[in-house]
Amino acid sequence: MAALRSRNISVSETSRPILPRHAKLKFDETRQRWVILAPERVLAPDDIAVEVLQLCDGVRSVEQMIDRLAEKYAADRGAIGTDVIAMLQDLADKGFLTEAREKTS
Amino acid sequence: MSPTLTDAGVAASDPSDGLAVLEQRGSTAETFGIPLAVLAEVTHRCPLQCPYCSNPVELERGGSELTTEEWKKVLTELAEIGVLQIHFSGGEPTARKDLVELVQHASDVGLYSNLITSAVLLTKERLGALADAGLCHVQISFQGNEPVVADRVAGLKNAHQKKIEVARWTRELDLPLTVNAVMHRQNLHQLSDIIQMAVDLDADRLEVANVQYYGWALKNRAALMPTMAQIEEASRIVEEAEVQLKGILAIDYVVPDYYALRPKKCMGGWGRQFFNISPAGKILPCHAAETITGLEFLSVRSNHSIAWIWQNSEAFNRYRGTGWMKEPCKSCEFREIDFGGCRCQAFALTGDAGNTDPACTLSPAHEEIFKQAEREAAADNNRFLYRNFAGGTLETEGEHGA
Image 1 (tube, each protein chain N blue to C red):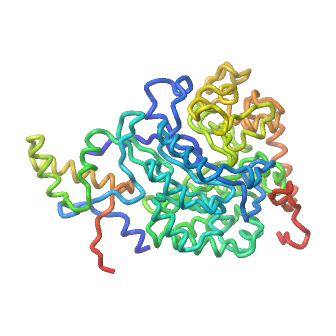
Image 2: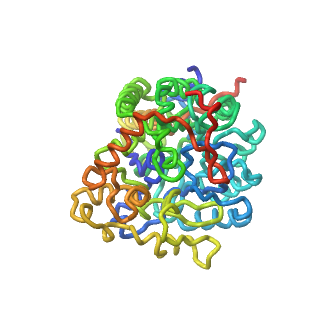
Image 3: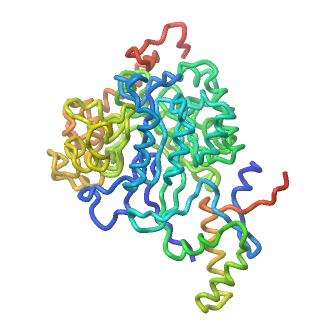
């Protein structure tokens, strides 16, 4: 069960989320929209989810992502931060985000 | 703020369902948008002999299979016309020596690849090579939760143990794992244990798929048909597990439609969201479509493009939409919800694929098949006809212990 738990991450400002190898964010040229490809599923994320997911490279921290979005949209950092963390947590709970892990083994 | 992640379809319980959102602008039945996911049955060869095999009774021989180059060309074409996911299936897809090369090619052209396998031919090394080639997801079929029932159903000794081993390697490689359990009268008593097995194997998804009765399964219906009591119990177990395992294991449950009130929206509607490609390259509306006689299915070896076959071929257009329907479908308020159920089942049970699927209570044949199912389940004749290239082999008396 340990392996199971490691798949479900808890998102905070220090997290460095990344899409797991089985979830692929891709621009679908035929239908002209972004999709997430997952086992047996194709999902159609909205524009905000796409923008946030594109920032999830496993290097950038959530804190840095929030800073960037707050600056881009000249919005209140506190409000953006709450929204972004909630969104990332939701994506993580659905299995579309994992955390870049330190190579310990 | 919760992101809007619209589910464009779960392709599992209904192998097919793939499009709603991405093509919601028009009626899909009219626009025939290219499917999101396509099933590539790269071979009919398989070391297992499951009596409910979804391959046609007339299996395509190894010699008629598309070559490596032909499959690569097909994969390229699929990606170009807008297909996003490819399911490598069979038969047993790993029986093809070139599978790693095909998966690599799928990755190269941008297709998301799933492997639908019995697992028994895989080595750790080969699975690793498939992962390196970009394989995105592995689905392993299980016939039970322990070797006695499972190996007998598969018709292959030590198959179960091997599957367990490959499932573990799959997770060691950090590939997502789906356990596919095909359920029937002779293994439904193991359902709780199968769910636990999926959890223990660290699977992400479990498909609890009751046998659908066409082809080989129809020949074996008397040996496979569950009792009504078994189905009620199975539904209860799945419902409980879904609550208990939320966030741990996703369960897709396919009910046996003989006992349903409404027919399934088979393939999301004929020629609407799905096609599969047979080993020899025939483009089919579903893997059982060839059981319907009198339809001609075009091949990728013909002079037509895949998109042309999908959009224009007679076989795809015959039962598309609702125009082909007779009563009671024609005036039915559910006609665009289930599209009259399954064409193959209508053909198998009534002799006319244009009839209402008898799984529907509105079909004049429903009462009779429901009673037949009950009678067969009660008779408890458990002997299998194993699937093979020779047209099937009846289980010997000694083998069947049940």
